[in-house]
Image (cartoon, rainbow, N blue to C red; front, side):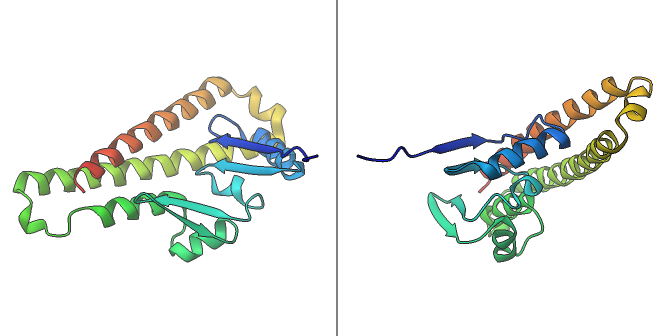
Length: 177
């Protein structure tokens, strides 16, 4: 008789979680006795959970036998967003002379928008992480601040909006590939 095979598949499970909730989920997943398939751009969350990373690119799958840090080391990047950015830039047309002036101008504009959006995302992520740490260490004082939850929620919504914008720009850049 065959043993049951436990598989858990999660797509971006940390998108709407604060740091405390992420840690609870991560601890639970570490205790999971089965196969865990995670799709995530959250490096901190993935650290300690992964033993194999699969990269899906150009209709091919590449296997990295190691955790997310090993994968980033092999790709020679600092974070997962850089992997996607490099892919978009690498796949952009190599012969700019063949592109029309308008296309070159549009491509430059999109790259600038992407860079600005990434800067804003990084700043917001840093601010949210600071708030999460404040919540974890001094909850009562943090929530006593005027409009604390409204401000926190607004930062999360703005981050979500910027991530959507980043995705749109990235897809638009891929159209120029």
